[in-house]
Image (tube, rainbow, N blue to C red; front, top):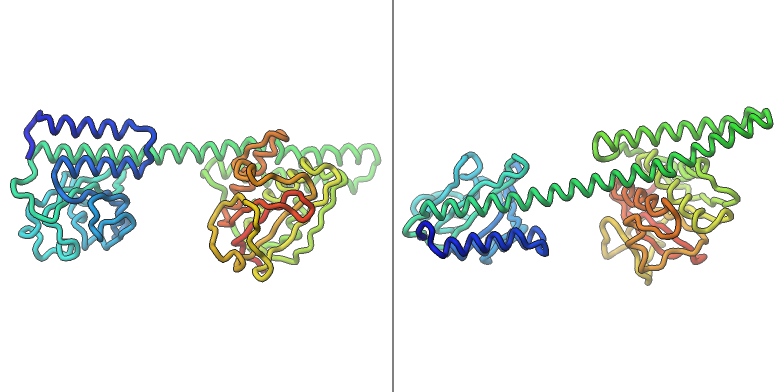
Length: 399
């Protein structure tokens, strides 16, 4: 038990201040440090932060080494001490759980002799609990200063969780802004140029058949604008997956890119489950990237990756999504070119949208990366057979 204004309390609060102002620690490290301070201050055995969703309690961070309270451990909420905190506005404490909770499912499961816990409210919503506990009862009871200290720990922990969420929201907003920039800078520019060029040709030659291509380009612009509006309104693209002909989508994508004398070989005979418009946008960006780097006479190949032929490369790769050990069991497709390729040490940067060679090229790859992630695909950059770039997409539902 501690007295009001005693040096131990002052030191503990100062320790919490140091933790929360340490910009070098990540969220897990900060939560663990807060728990360490609380365990020392209260002189108990354990501290833990939980995330409660529905009827399940999950331990996010913990100190003390209780086998059932390690990070990642879960249990039914009705078998936890923390269920007593959920429906109450105030902190909950059991100084002698051996007497107060002798027949309680939580005591039978965890065997804690004392417990004190407070709610975590993140963005105004219930998130979970911050708790301290010991193997033995707390003989003198938790006094008012100790209860306030636990509440302070809970408020600081909730703030740290909220801060991380805010940063993640900002990062998602930045991703959307990057996609806006990419769509406005060249995703829309290419079909616009196609439309203008074909209209001009039709005006000069009098051949109205050229207007068919202009109409397709304008329809593609309408699709891109719809996708952009959905992204702006909902923070993520509407994902309407359906079986689509990969070769047909590739030909449509090729038709709205200024390809010059470049050639496309697309004979995969594959059907993939994907959002057709987003898949076309992915291929448009890859085709444009190939032509920008390999030249107007680039040779671009769209191919399929079958489970019985795919092998892990020896070179380093940049990936997004899962990376199972047995890559040979995965299927997908690739786009390859005969350009200069991307050195292994630059591949992660390429996926992050960084480019020093062509204006807008990096943004295009960032959009590709995002669309792959939306579909749950793994994206990998390798070297093509001709020494150019090969963009692979694995974990694709392929028929």
